[in-house]
Image (cartoon, rainbow, N blue to C red; front, side):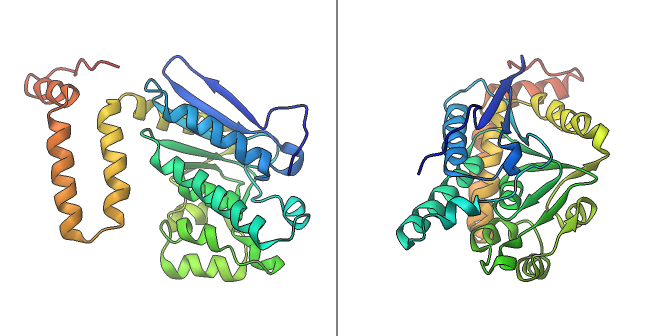
Length: 263
């Protein structure tokens, strides 16, 4: 299926530090994840993955909302099992590519984040939300259990908290989302960008190699038993310690001076 628009699905910008901002740009549709939007995200994330100078990624939404999930009108227009299987597999692969990026990814959330939009928040490494943002996995309200969002949601929240959201489809506030572990920080709407920037600034001040090694290990160990996780973590730390950034950082600590890292 095709979707025509005069505006790009993704607005992409980059600052001098290597921080890339990807803004979902279907404001009239509350940035629903149409096929066109998924394709644009796939391309943008692929570009980030291939660029060793990127330090962090921020995913935001244009207009009044972060992301309202899948485009239900587009989905209803093609009622076939094969189409739906391909659509959800494609969306899942796009989500997984965020986790596989070697740099931290931050969701900047305002308005609503529902269904696959809530999944997008959950799969990002970090999330900062406006105090008036709301979150839901609301597919059950139209008879469609949010199965794919449940995978990342249940890895962020406690089991009973995640299941309650999935079976009721009810909204939770930004403050509730922070308390449940879905997001990291809540800020007043006028301070949202400053809160995101505070997190970004802390990230880009650290060596990229250490963050890349650490992020990959963090997600690997979550899916393994504790013995295998500790063995993997030990190997990761040993490799990290051999990197010049760690050697410089430790030496700087010993000499009581700031580290002189290569950016």
